[in-house]
Image 1 (tube, helix red, strand yellow):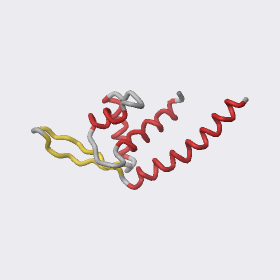
Image 2 (cartoon, helix red, strand yellow; image 1 turned 180 degrees about the vertical axis):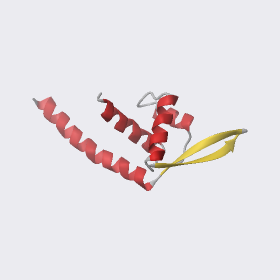
Image 3 (cartoon, rainbow, N blue to C red; image 1 turned 45 degrees about the vertical axis):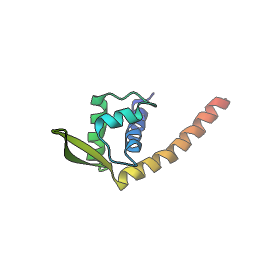
Image 4 (cartoon, rainbow, N blue to C red; image 1 turned 135 degrees about the horizontal axis):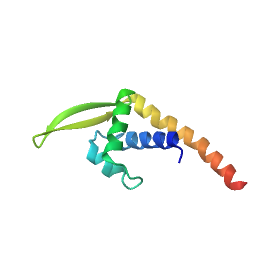
Length: 101
């Protein structure tokens, strides 16, 4: 898969995983595992990028004596999911054309 396309898909999968409730790294990996394998290093790179682009916000809390970061999707992140859905329709149209040829 093209690296740029894959990056965009991964970003949206992470956003979708936290769309309905705030979450933390390990849980995000667990939640997306039915559809893709995501390493911790890849996830934290994605989370940092999404934070820098204001698609999510981070808050730290104590959990069992350790600091845990919780990620919250912003309205910009929700908009990105909706944009991706529209883009994906175009990709599926292209796929259908290729299949028919």
